Image (cartoon, rainbow, N blue to C red):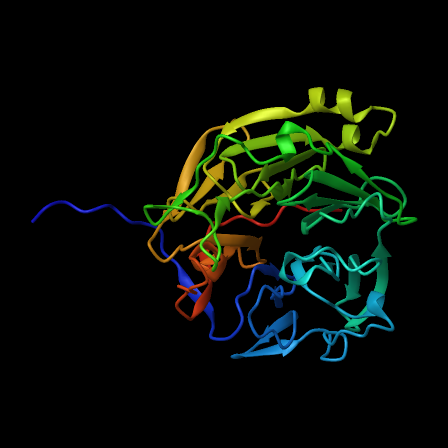
Length: 361
């Protein structure tokens, strides 16, 4: 018998999804698990949920997950990312762009929910020069040690316009785009993604095709909040930039690109996360793997398993496990001439890493 590929990494199944496809997961400091389901064509009954026992419950309630055209700032439209900040707040990033449409004007938002009361505490919306007609808000990280109320950093992973890092002053809601259209936030024009041995590209039901392109997506922040890591979705490269430079608007976008640090090739990643020791965890969706990049730049492979069919979002729980959503994103109909090749269930998995999440405060 011929030798076969070596797979490794011991995963536990946390939850199996038999309905809509999830993208985001976040585990709070008390162990509560939250997930989200953007509206990409599946039957999404609620776009944010909490896993309670063996069930999904709309979070914070079904009413908030029901689109209200008369009050779009207080209702979720299509949530791409959720993030528990370790100090009692769940942050919800609403693209307001179902099916990757142009964002509904004034409805794209960052929402803070108090985990003790399960009530919305703050809503941050964005001006038209921040959330563009091409913007797709993807993921978010926080640092509450700077400014009076802290800052948020959001990736714009647009497939049709400029990528960027959106910086939000949480004291007053002022937001601005940084690295707008820079090489580091843009798709790699020479990158040809290959998943399950096949080239991944847009293949429409009418037979037309186009390259798969998506801008800055994965994002992670160092334990001291001084360095932001990010990567385009269609790229194998890792970048970093001092957060102080991102916040300093006296640095022009042209000059800001010279503050970007190239951290080498890590594989093609969707989500990323940082632990308390400064290690960055990133998926490699081309190779069914999860990578760990140490502060000194050395890269290790944490897991290589055929079940890691498109590792999407990561979270680190108080139980020192790395949680990951695997959702077969590349098997969606948009990449296969209108034929949906996904096989339910999708999964939420976890693997022991013996590290806590990077603090944000």
